Amino acid sequence: MKFLGALGLMGAMITTSSAGELLRPRINLGSANVKTISGDRGGYVIDYAIRVLKMRRSGGAVRIDGACDSACTLYLSMPRSKVCVTHNASFGFHLPYGAGARGNQVAAEFLMKNYPGWVRGWIARRGGLKGYIATMTYADASRFLPTCPSAQRLTVANLSPVRAHGG
Image (tube, rainbow, N blue to C red; front, top):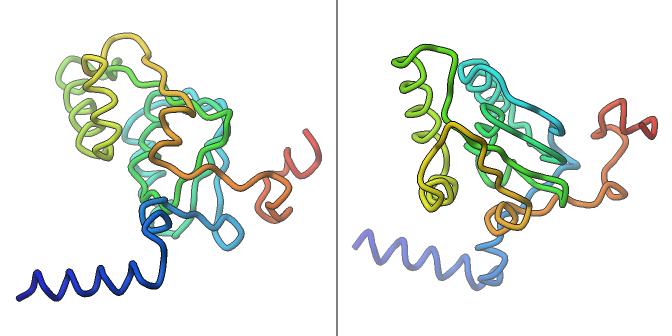
């Protein structure tokens, strides 16, 4: 009986919106606290875990407009509706290092546990996390994440000070 109720609800959703719109994640950068990421080489996994948690709690969104490597890739664990990518976006994945054997293992398990299934699948198809960076480009990421609205449609309030001044 619960299944039929859920099926009915899904049917109602499809009649009010096209199936393509339901499958394609949406992001509204105009109404959210937006963090633009570009050239982020990563850092300590715990630091990024805290940043992502704070961003989730604040209801903010993330705009990936360049390289997001290493621990920065934890932003991919945010809801799809809160992350978008530009054509400049790329993600670099590798095995954690620098925390000792056990610490590195815990960090790797934490990353893999928190990545969405599509990211875990992408990593698995490349043989898992390695000691070198495997780069996911916009072409792969945009299959699962929405493309960010163009910069012309963003309000000045949503731009970083550097972008607002043309830098």
